[in-house]
Length: 193
Image 1 (cartoon, rainbow, N blue to C red):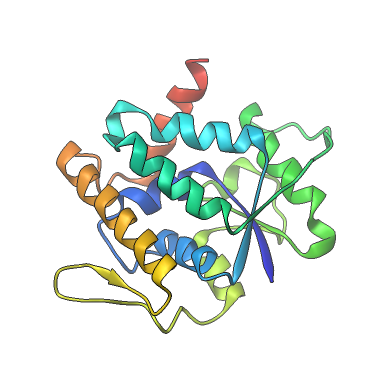
Image 2 (cartoon, helix red, strand yellow):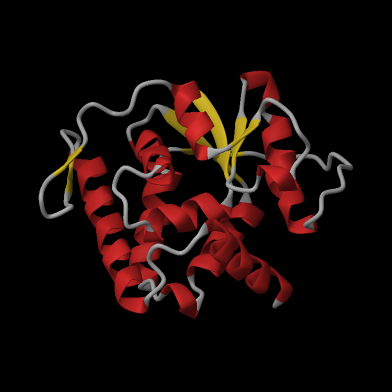
């Protein structure tokens, strides 16, 4: 089992991506398949919900709750003591503390913002993480309508829900946002507190 803390920008990117082959979506697929255990705590979950509720993404709250609920079925809640680390964005510290709490188990922090964290082997991009986890899920494919299917009915249902979120993001004009644009939205959400 591979353990990973998933930064909010990866979750947002996965839900609004236009590309079914994108590394961020493949990271989510690995979690849903049970190959990766997502590490969370209450503060991380609150940030996921807060950012995904932003009007810019135009995601239906019920669908967002379904996605988070399915991901939580493949997660471990971690009590992380403060590490004393100082990061450019203080709200990133919780993600770093959680990964540090599980480093003895080989945990990774998967983020599109590696520059916001100390340079170390366990802070990785989604693509780097996929290389670590190894080959992509072989039971996944995309048909000509961009619908996801999987031999596992729970994962298949979850992936269809994510496809609906992607369609909602397309309608809202937020699909295909760059990582910098997503990070700007996350920063705006964080500063609004």
